[in-house]
Length: 478
Ligand SMILES: Cc1ncc(COP(=O)(O)O)c(C=O)c1O
Image (tube, rainbow, N blue to C red; front, side, top):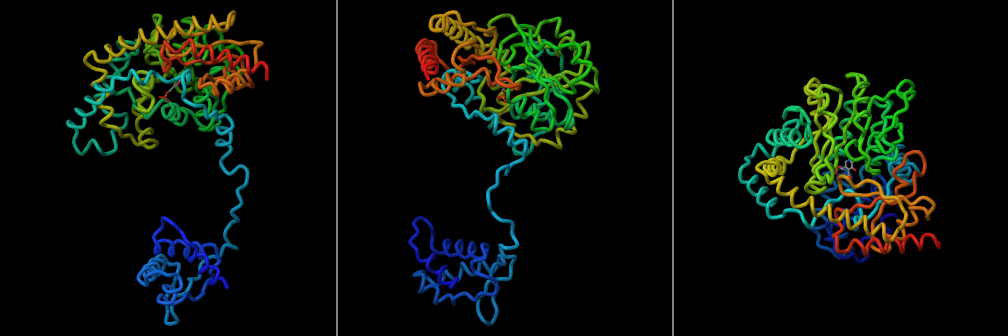
């Protein structure tokens, strides 16, 4: 009976799969599911070939493969199904809720799955990317490397790039470090994950900015840390004294040069106050300097440079300077932590990308970078100005924040339709604003929109803002 049903299934027409492969797959599945029970004798190959309308060789090969894999056994009586655990002994395959870990459930709940359309924050102008230069640097790098560069990379990354980053940071961000202190990782997210695992333990407390970068919050949560949102005002993270006394952090994640998303700059007094509190072995401050390359005002130098021996880890990425898909970011550790961090990192993470890293080192050298920045800075400055002007026109009276650096602005819309509703309506108009309220960990935050202008050409910005205002009106009427 079971065999008849199986033969019926086998005879059903099936396009796109070789017969031998199909026989092998169906037979194996029927055995695993228990539809063909242990000891059942299979038809002789010649008969099955006639029954199923296939060449005998195909049947022989399928049987041989399943014999070799242990699903079938052969004896004098012919070919039989092997005696294997039956499904009644296997767990039931009923998808239950909570199939992933509790951490994964937290991450899925905050997933926004938002499209990358104009106004999506965090993306530079990929059309203005210096294609010819970058492809030439990659080709040169491929010509210069040997077989050893295809192996796992040295912990920390390619020495030439570590050196180039150390010089670049010294010149542009006031970071005081040597190449050995620089550790290259595949993106800021991976770098944050490494910090969460190597600088703190599960259950330790991490302070994050409120509102803040959801990816940082989620990465710390996923590494088992307890996250404490700390409110940000116009001068960056504002820490009440009592919080330092009662809930001191093991880890602090800050975006001091250009707070994400609000755009404030952490005031010098607050920088010094943090430095005065930080004790090696007790605290770590992660200085996430994710977008200060494109500064429209004079940026404050990095906190790291104020006291290079403090427990501060400087974090930078090439996602804005070049392109996010490059996945190259870096951490700068204090000198006293370099050896132990490097050893532990080597166990957690295997590096690669030698060719891209060597090409990037040459991009940072020889004034190429300066030329690229000189080309891009006025483009972004203009987009920012056009965006501001359009927002003033279409959202009269609304407060606009940020924009001294980086590639995004915040439009505050208190008392207007919920920002999530505006965002949903705007997506229908091909505009990808982000809802400010979703950047808060403690329930919905301020109502407003986060608008990235990296990808939006100046000429189309007024039209995009007009569409946004239509979306806001639609959301208000809904
Ligand atoms: C605060 C912050 N850090 C880091 C990043 C991105 O880094 P990466 O692309 O290297 O993961 C972003 C991107 O928007 C960001 O906002």
